[in-house]
Image (cartoon, rainbow, N blue to C red; front, side, top):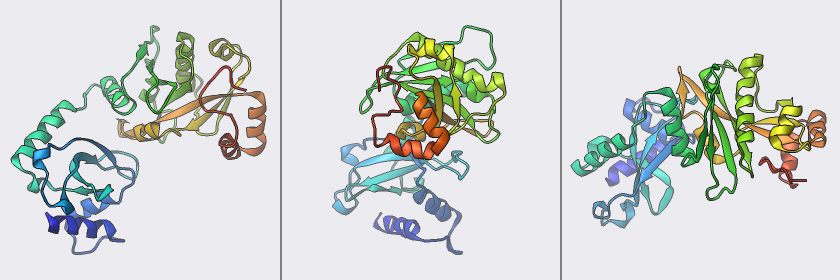
Length: 300
């Protein structure tokens, strides 16, 4: 084990692959240096822990690396987290697994298997990353794509609701990656859910691509859904919340990664600011003022 850990540290510290490296060593080096890696884990049984403190295992996690285009690799690697360096996971090849560990891996993999049905797969990743689904506002009309809206209730450290479409990604509207619409709100209502569904259908119905920095004027439909006339426009933003960024790329449809796109209600003055100075300047101001990406009908 010490020799294995030492070798993995060498792979992680190397600036570029060496000609003498084996294919597995190249894979491990890529995985250990990839900041976009996704980890999910569980506690390792206490009786499995070695007595040598330097290599004592605190927990074991699964690692599935991302490719440069956001897709997940097929490799599923176990990781050991060391108390002395909890932020540096160490990959452990399957040849070093004990029979008990191998059995536990297999059982855990069965419990967490991903459904084959695309809609069930989407729900699987939604709940895995964002927590339990509070409710689903189902599409009742015969429309394509079929667009449900998933509602996630407040959970630590967030005190707001998240509305997330499920169906827009069935259609490629960007030519680069697929989208779902995310909407943060301090209030929960059926009207909001139906409004988010309308937003989800908009790119398909109108044939217009929406992306980070785009704006939309809402009109009477938006005013009725939001319950106020103070926010006549929407701003679309790439995901800012850590969980939503993590969700991006975990779901694939026909090889294309799926990413959430935030819809943020903004006032007339905020809309004018964005038109004059750009969305980057606006986001810089968001950190200095009460302006929030979370919809609150009472916010100033």
